[in-house]
Length: 208
Image (cartoon, rainbow, N blue to C red; front, side, top):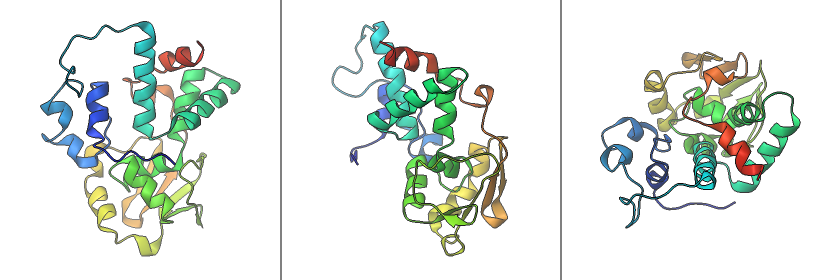
């Protein structure tokens, strides 16, 4: 799998919005978007002209980076969303939200999706009592997600749970912090997802 080793804060600056890729740092005054609210690079403070294609591309790149998905897999999600009943853009967002790594992040066991992916791949997460180490595993309503008993003393997990109230837990999740466990009550509706995402632009990008 491709691995980006540079500062992920550049992604936020490139998209000119917080993508919450660095956990608690994104909520502090150290956030790069707060300190330098312009794209990186020597031409970052210029006045770029945005075409329709460029606007669609930036929205696609933004959502890919938010959920930590590479291009091939993201395109597959778009294709799957098109084949499902309903609105393609909304289907796409629900598919991304139903990934296991995203659910671990939403429940507060990790301060970022990258940290959540690490927990999953290292075998710290149980789904319905069984270990699952596939980050793209699709979670369904009624599934129970919990940390293995031996993993509950991991410092990063403890720190994340202390600050979970600041990030907030979605209403479609029921989290028992004391027992390191969460239940997916339902998959989110469009109204419960970030309004800053313009999913229709992504659909238009892949329909070209």
